[in-house]
Figure 1 (cartoon, rainbow, N blue to C red):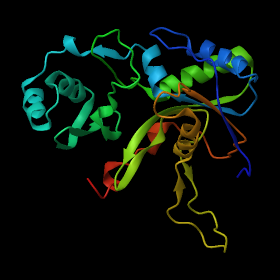
Figure 2 (tube, rainbow, N blue to C red; figure 1 turned 90 degrees about the vertical axis):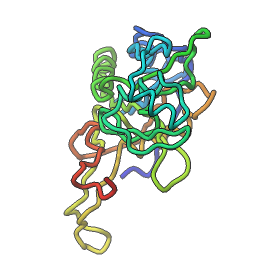
Figure 3 (cartoon, rainbow, N blue to C red; figure 1 turned 180 degrees about the vertical axis):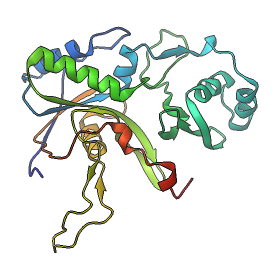
Figure 4 (tube, rainbow, N blue to C red; figure 1 turned 45 degrees about the vertical axis):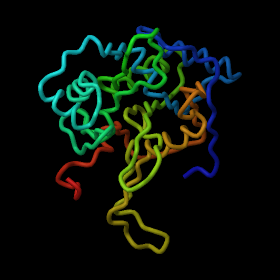
Length: 254
């Protein structure tokens, strides 16, 4: 394990719009921060700019709510059109109360409003929401391949979002997409400090990186959607962020 890491927010990232070239934006941000890509760089990219580049914006006025959405909207006191968007992005509603919907997203994450967000979405006065990327692991992989092709350097890429946590207050950065690194490191069978073999320990490696990067990326108006992490090392096999999701048969709370 490394004894020293650096985490740097990259400067000069513009407001991202649909169709923008994220690889070009990343490389310009390196220059704006007086840095050059190096082998082993881990880039943490905020989900919002990935979603914007992929055109994952939905105008609320364009949505016709279903009867299910209308009924649920009355219970939670939300716009039925927004509830309909949440239902379309979800496998199921896990819990709900007034002004709160906890959903299992269609990709398996359990989160408020299926990750649908109004914040940091400039819409010119129109009520627009931003959905999560269709496949964040694929998004991370495509960006990684582009960056390596452009620079000849070896990268890893994490797409991060902010989640609340059961039994804990506050949101933290988590990985919803990853490429080029092990999202989970399995320590089972390895000895502990006293030689006893570990039986259950697994590290959410990509989540730890995303949480650390969020300290420089921020949650509000900081406008730092890309963080560069240097000094990491690993020997475990690569695994996507989908590997972080606990299987239902291992989840005691379902």
